[in-house]
Length: 363
Ligand code: ADP
Ligand code: MG
Image (cartoon, rainbow, N blue to C red; front, top):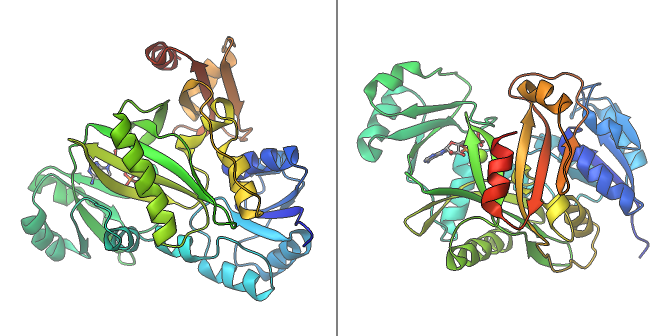
């Protein structure tokens, strides 16, 4: 069978941009579809279609320009995938991982069913059901919108009754109440299942958040070998048992050697950007190889690494960066530097992890 050489990507942000950069190395042509005229993905894509995800005209142009289609964010409407499949386009990931990851209760129920542990949770719709759920779960707890939340948005920490009044309820949302896990570590695993059935897991990253936004990923995570192995095997089990293809970034909490699933995203993940400079293949390379049916290679960590996110408020610091050996700066080329907006990242590579953390901290 002739190999597909033209890749279409739904979404055109920095993840799409980095998929396109990988595609270029492998000689694949890329087309992104994103309603935002300023999408930074256009800086690396061969073509940018400016259209909404449900714009039939835009989707038809995507079909003309792509043999195989993937996505870079989890909120692509399922109707979009239905339409592209009706147009007989190859979408190896399908809509199943979108369906699961678009709803926090759905995704937690799915992993619980296959025996993966999560924080205790309840479905909540209003103050009454919240109060009832709080009696069962107890404080501290965390309330989250089931859909559309990211970077800690749409979440309320409930330490006691007073916090209930801070919640902004909206009529067309469902909510999940989770028991707060007093974890010692937050980690993530990027696992990718190719259409050949090959599954690879990248080394576990230890994640440090600031104000609900990922600040730093430390690799290897400072956890025992046994826990790292177990997380890798849980991650592989999730893609296998839930029959998911393509990339899946899975977040976990570790508390007293217990592993709790937090959430998953069927796309490249911020916490795996370290793979660009510290592994023999990046998450973007393997995403493409996986959906294009190539045999997946063994992943090797070539060096220890700390990935630091560059945010909009760091613009002045970025202007003054003094590049050092083994410090790889990636700037996404977004038009506007805004607070809390992810503008780029730096991978600090080297042999002394504590030194790398200090370097990243003093950026
Ligand atoms: P987002 O989609 O915004 O990343 P998450 O569910 O990952 O949403 O929550 C954001 C952060 O809030 C997590 O990285 C973690 O630090 C904290 N958090 C979320 N749920 C819990 C929980 N059940 N127990 C403890 N901390 C939590
Ligand atoms: Mg998260």
